[in-house]
Length: 440
Ligand code: AMP
Ligand code: ZN
Image 1 (tube, protein in one colour):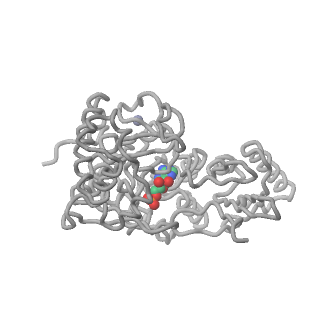
Image 2 (cartoon, rainbow, N blue to C red):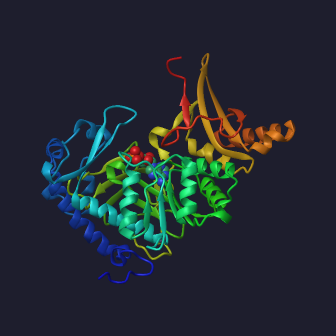
Image 3 (cartoon, protein in one colour):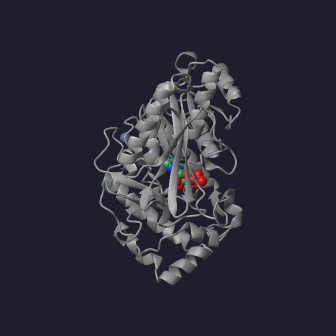
């Protein structure tokens, strides 16, 4: 028989483990992980080359002596070079096609998949999801880890799980109405698509649907986007962070405080490093997230450079969980582009745009070269009413966007206002930047 669940925590002991005991657990798991990693062909060689004897690594203070692992290493180890168990013990393979360079794979044992499902259940339970909920999973199944990750977590938690997948939005809405969906998972760009379809169908989600919670993740989005989706869909939005290399979602997740994501430190050792010097930055400062798996047997990864930029938030969280929180991901270090010598992240543009009520649900940044000059054009979908009003208000909006962008990025880009639905849509994660400067 199932024992009754704690009313707040899925795994009360682990979630509220005092920091010093959490550290002891991490050290014990680190030693086990290193011993396992040394059994994989790739790490055996990497440790040898770095002159590291894993037995000599006893505690967290020794971490800096271990070599970092990069995406390039994963490519070199493709497909089975990182396997730390026998091929027979691996039961799942996820491959990322990688828009740049060769593919990579991540392998899981049955126990790894169990641990992942448990962690996902922990994340969702934390936000108030219970077995009485109906969960509609609107992300891709298959190689994209968001689909299967949430799916197994939701079943583990006991929710009625609807594996809807992405797209076919009218059918999604029908499901929501018929099944009384209360919780959804989507990537942010799809949440916007769904809002557009609801509008077309004349359905007010706040009145006509039972939705109360949405998990959004897998791509960067701003606080303004969160508030917008919350307002328009009538839900609370929780940020979900993960990456295929660390199984997928379930690395870090927001609690009801909605102020940073708890990163599960029983499963991951967290470092935030200066991407140039590769030394730790101070708490609260931004750097690259570097993660070591602590409970993975098939494919342990040591000090993996995620390329994601974030900061560890100082201080304990009022929710009582002792695992530290990371800030909203600003983007990957490779998302940044340089125009006229200025470093720009798409999220800076998004934050400004989504804070303006006249702005619609999509935008795109196009980079061109004219002669020797870089030209940045921001294409912005604006609300349909704006095109029905007089030209003056469109002009005024354009001026407002220009001024806001100028004060954020310190030069004046071009701004083009377009009708809702006119920017190209992508399957899966949104493509925010179209760089046409090369090869032209
Ligand atoms: P993938 O392994 O292909 O699913 O992609 C993982 C990457 O997606 C991460 O390394 C991040 O760059 C990005 N990502 C995932 N979740 C979030 C999130 N909540 N906010 C911002 N970026 C995210
Ligand atoms: Zn919390």
